[in-house]
Amino acid sequence: MINLKIMSEDNSNHFRCTHCGKLLAKDNLEAGHFEIKCIRCGALNVLFRDNKEQIVVTDPNGTILFANGLTELITGYSLEEIVGKTPALWGGLMPKEFYATMWHQIREEKKSISVELINHRKNGEKYLANLIISPVLNTEGEIKFFIGIESIKNNLK
Image (tube, rainbow, N blue to C red):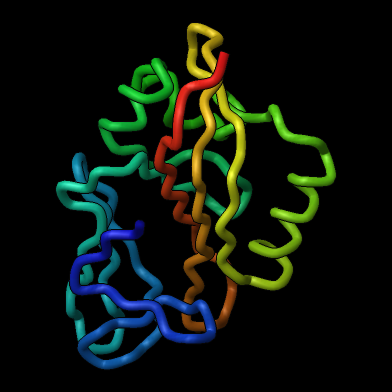
């Protein structure tokens, strides 16, 4: 499932620093991993190093800021094609109600979701996946970004 290093999530679905408990607010995007620096104690909370799932980080509007290399392998889109777009590039196959409910939960309720959905690769091949999306909030409780972690269940015809 989610492989977070040095990072934990409390019961309220807010990501907090494991060193001092403060809500995390600052970020640093680098190739291969995603880091959030705690503004209280300065500890660096590192996520997604050597992960086995597709990982995508978006801004609050869903624009992709970061994708790991596995995203490129799974979707067939290059990282250059992915960054700056939305995950609709390989998604969008579920009913409109599905996406309305998803956005309401992660954006309005600020809660994580875990769903099963159908996506497609650049070549049109469809696949079934498990997706977890979690909002990351700043110290004022506003959404800073969303983290999506997708694992393939199987290919579809």
